[in-house]
Image 1: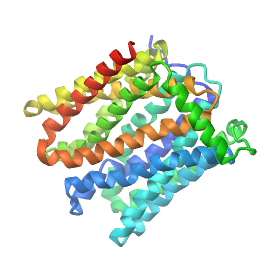
Image 2: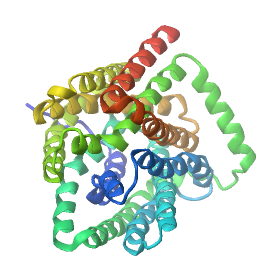
Image 3: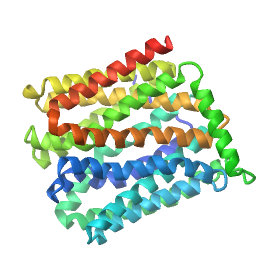
Length: 394
């Protein structure tokens, strides 16, 4: 009999808010690279656009961790959700190119507010199994992928992009109310009103000292390499399907929906496996899966079809979920005394690596092409994983 993994109340509410945030954003985000290319952006400029989103996310995460000592993290997460709503509104009102870049930066700051605060709430809560809790948290975007692109396409077809941005604004507004009502109470224990900036510096020094001990730093490096490769896919996977495989927008939409519908039950099974393993195994095995499937993807590009792309993407995404859950679970255990700083550190890794991955791939793609880009990216992850394992003697 298929069993749904256990989920604590706090994990459930944070995951629901994360799902709602991603649903509102993914109504149109699937088409974002296509949207940029249609507006005359080069592939290199597509990488720059993602850099503008993810670098502010990484830069502001430590600032959010400091504010979490002064302000209830649920309030900060709510402000982040409202920022996503403002972004949707801004995309309706956008007229000048300079404003387009401003809205991307605003989106990155809003994401920092939500993700650093949401992670701080989870890391400051008494979780029975941190890897399992973050498995739920990181699976939320996959659930949103199952429905949001289809709903977004319907609204774009019926009301143009204005309609989908208005729907996104409504969803983010409702989610902000949910987050504020459901998470403000559980997160109330986190703020320390006597906290000063000098304490923040001391906490980060202590946190990084703890992460340097044992295999933690090597395991985080493996996860960073996976996220770096994720930047390649975030910026160019949909463009690859469109330009190299000549898929139509409708076929890309069908692919996204089928992938997510299949991945949803798989993620529930995978979360049960994640909770049964130690963080180090989740990270290392996830890295091996990501590297292998990326190499396979690039190597068989000439014979790729709908089914093979689907299966390879499922395998790679399973590895990403395993490694991400393991990384957050590891940081949670190592930095249990510093939940705000742990949330910020965990938040920094993902956008920083994604931003660098998008930037690097934007530069290299002109020389390597799609196939070598994915192959070399996969090789890099495998080398990082094997090297880190030997160095840390795991």
